[in-house]
Image (cartoon, rainbow, N blue to C red; front, top):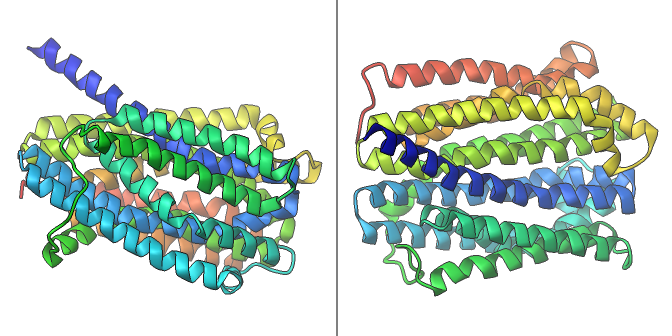
Length: 441
């Protein structure tokens, strides 16, 4: 019996985490590939311009997370209880809410790209290219949103491999179109935005086959409108949205400090670091989001042992993955940085800054997994406290304050310091919430 249970656990870990990691890394690979082609084909200033736009683009991703994770959490728990109708209600409500939000953001972004670029702090060096990138990215917010939400639900509905295939195909399409639009067609940063959008359209087309073939439990269809269910979706998804907001808030605050204190070159260097950081985050998020359905379903079944096994597994996987990635970046860093451009001043600036910035990777990996575990088991209050402290209060406060209190270069250490404090808070919240064992609601 014990051997069968161990084999089942290992199979679940592989079936859910590996496709999820591939899917998340593939999604972030879009951004990395854009950076490589933009740096090589357009130049250092274009790298900085895209990085100036990233807080807004990543804000859209975070908003998608609100509906996606909120809906998935409710769906997983209901599936664990055998409530197929309730699971479909959550899926349909979450999808419609996400598409409505994407439609509003599309209209605003296409109408006011220059004002958004101004609010993001783009100076004369980056302003025009930042505006272009926002405008052309906004044309694809609807497929981007649908791609994001379908990836989560199709994975949760028993087809994680299809999600991995869809993202890989989309990523390969993005690579080819990046080359085509930026080099032969000389379209600059707008070409990078269009290539990413086209890749997402293809991902959506592939994921829709899950529903066309009527795989799994979830079905597309009409939803009986429910304010109560909408409230539950927002409540369950808010902690993860706040976790996701950490990246755009960090990028926004870093850009403002760097452009004022260390100059345009530091912004371009941070752009390279951000591309690498986003890909690393894909691994961590892939593990936490891949395990979320397993944790949620076992919470629905009231199986505390299985829940804790998958949580501990996620912590271990993320910890060793973060250490391995950081080591690789230190060992092979120069070769990796040079993919984004051959200018020695850019490579040297990145090589100097990344070790100071990247030491927090292991802490981020643990914080994400703890946060996912909390909101997947209906500990919304604790998850909200952790997400608010980590992603809104500490990151922004330390990035903006430390350079003013000490030397400007300390800004590179601020992310790790914020994550260390957040990790201490996360451990306290986790232990306090389980002081009398797991409570099932």
